[in-house]
Image 1 (cartoon, rainbow, N blue to C red):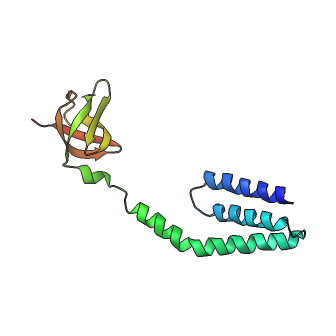
Image 2 (cartoon, rainbow, N blue to C red):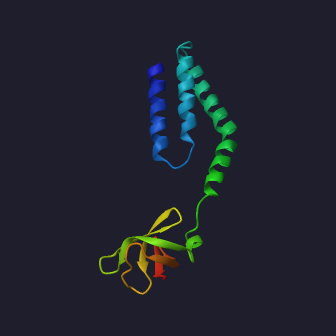
Image 3 (cartoon, rainbow, N blue to C red):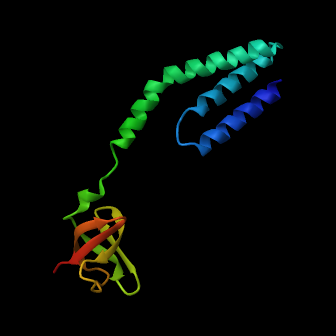
Amino acid sequence: MWQIWLIIAGACIIMEMLTVGFLIFWFALGALIAMIFSLFIKSFVIQFTIFIISSTILLFTTKPFVEKFQKSNSDQKISSSSIEGDQGIVTKEINPIKGTGQIKINTEIWSAKSIDNNVIPEGANIIVEKIEGVKAIVKQIN
C-alpha cells in the first residue's frame, strides 16, 4: 500500500506545480505521512484517516505562516509609475523604425521608445516621461 501513497504524494506535488496557490502541497505531505504509517498499519481506513487528519493539521497550522510570507513578498512589487521622472541610460539604441530600444534605470532593464520618435544612441542619458504597457517612453537629455 505504501506505493499507492507515494504515487498520491507525487501526483499532489505535480498538481501543486501546475497551480498558483499553495494548498495541494500539504496533501502531498499528508500522503507521505500515510505512507509511513502504511508500513505498520494494514487497514486502509486508518491510513486514509491519518492522511486526512495530518493534511488538515498541516494546512491549518501553517496557513498563517504562508499568508504572512506571501503578503511580505507582494509588498515588494514595484509600481511601473515609480520610475516616471527617473533618469537612466540607453543600453540598446532606441530606433522607432526598427522597433528596438532598451534602457537601464537603477538596476532594472526596460524596453523603451522615444517620445518624439527620434533615434537615441546607445549610452545616451534619458529621462522616463511615462509608461505605456511594458515600455518606458523616454526623452533624451543632454
